[in-house]
Length: 229
Image (cartoon, rainbow, N blue to C red):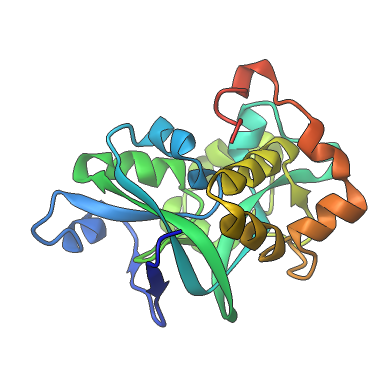
C-alpha cells in the first residue's frame, strides 16, 4: 500500500465545473479519490478511460457508510426496494475514523462525466461527501422539481439520505472484491471501517451475522462486467 495520507480539516466545496477549474492550477489533470466502486481500477476506467497514476492512500477524519439511495441501481435493475437493499456508499467527516481509498488523476475534459456519475454528492476538494435532501434539491436540481423527478421521483424515491436502508447486494459485493484486490490492509479496512446507515454495524458484521450469502451471488449478466470487483 502507498504511504500517501490525506488529511483535510475544512475541505473546500466544489459546486460546479468552474469551481473545479480553480484547483487545476497549471496542470491538465486533477486528483480524484475513490472509496466505493472506484476502489476498482476497472470501474474507474469505465467512467475515466484516460485516468493515470491509480494508487492507494489512507484518508483520515472521514467515515464511509451506506447512507443514501442510488437511482443508478434502479436503472440497472439491481435495486431491491422490497427489502430496502438500495443503498450506495457515501462519506462524512468523522474525526476518529480513517478509510483506505484509491487516488488517481483525470483530465480536465472528464470533469463533466465525474459530476454526472456522482450527481447526488457534495464535491469536496478531497472526495465525494454526504449531502442533505434539501441541499441536493437546491444545488443539483436548482430548486426544480422536474429535475428531482428525473433523478429520483420516477423511481418512487422521496427521500435520498436515510439510515434505515441496506446496501445494494450487487454493489456491496463489488466493493468488497475491489478492496480485496487492493491487498489485505485495504480489504480489512473496508470490512471494519465501512458501516451501514446506522453508523454502528460494520460490513464485516453485516456479512457474517446477517447475510453471508451476498458474496456467493453472481451479478446479473447485464452488469457482470461492471460489478466484478
